[in-house]
Length: 356
Ligand SMILES: *Cc1c(COP(=O)(O)O)cnc(C)c1O
Image (cartoon, rainbow, N blue to C red; front, side):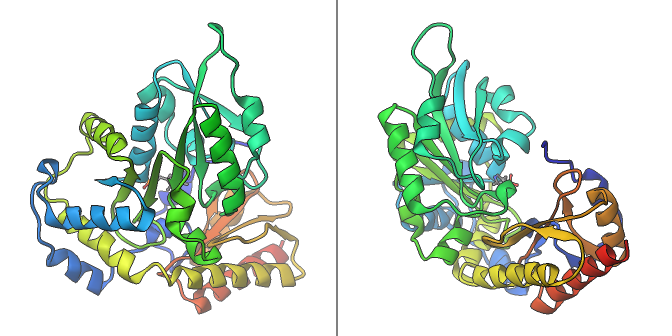
C-alpha cells in the first residue's frame, strides 16, 4: 500500500494544540536558542566553522567512524550516500517500507540513476537469506546490485527496531557479496535508548550511517553523515553538487550539539508515552486496531472510516495525526507533548471511534 501524502493535513491553517503529526514538529526551546545565539561560527565550506567541527568530532566519537559531514537534511544524507556507492544502472536493495524509496521524491532514480529493489521484511526487518536471494547474478542483462539500505528505527514499519544480530547477519551477507551497506539512522538514538545497544555497535557493519537532529532530538535543522575518511571525502563532492555546502552553519550545529547533550536519554519518555497512548486505545471498547509499539510511534486503524476523515475530525478537536494509508494513521510522541496531552489525545481517538 503506497503511503499517503500528508499535504491535505499540513495545509490546514490552525496549529493543533496536541501535535502528534511527527517528531519533526518540535521547536527549539530557550536554552537551545541561547546555545545557537552564542555559537562560534566560520565558513563551513572551508571547514572553518568551529562549532560544526566540534559536532563532526562528537558524531565520529558516538558512531565510531573516522569522519563525518554536517548536512541540512537526512534526505540529503541518503541521496549523497547512494550517489557515492552507486553508478547509473546499479540496483539498491531495501525494505519496501523504506523512506528512501517512498518519501524522497524519486531521488534514487533522479539523482543517481539507480533501480530500487524491495524486500518484504517483517516490520521493516529482512533476513540475510532474503537479501542473498535478491542479489542479481552477474550478466549483461541485469542491473548490478551494489548497495543495501537498512533503516533504524524502521519508520513506516511502525518505528520497529532492527535487532543487532539481524543487522550483523545482513551486513555480513552484503559484505560477502561486495555490496555497500548504508544505515538510515534518522531515529538511531530511539533504538539506542530502547535497547541499550551502543550507537557505534549498530553502525559498525556499515560503510555509511547518518543521524537526524531534527526528529526526536528536537533541533530545528540538520543531520550528520558518517563513515570512513575516504567515503566522507567523496560525500563532500556531492554535498557541493547537491547544494548542501553551507557557510556559518555553526548556528544550527550548536542546536545539534545541545540536542546530543540534553535530548537523547529523554527519548525513553517518548517511548513510554507512545505505549500509554496505545494502551488507552487497546483497553477501550472502540473498534480500533493498534499495531505493536516499538519506540515513539503508534500506528492505528479505526474500523470503517477513512483515515483522512478521521484525522480531520481529530484536527477539529485540536489533535493532529498523520495519515499513512487509506485507513491507517500514525501518532508520534516527542519532547513537545506531555504524558497528559498524549492521554488526552488517546481519549479523543477513542471518543471519535465510539461515536461512529
Ligand atoms: C525523516 C526521515 C528521513 C529524512 O530526513 P529529513 O531530515 O526529513 O530529510 C529519512 N529517513 C527516515 C527513516 C526518516 O524518518
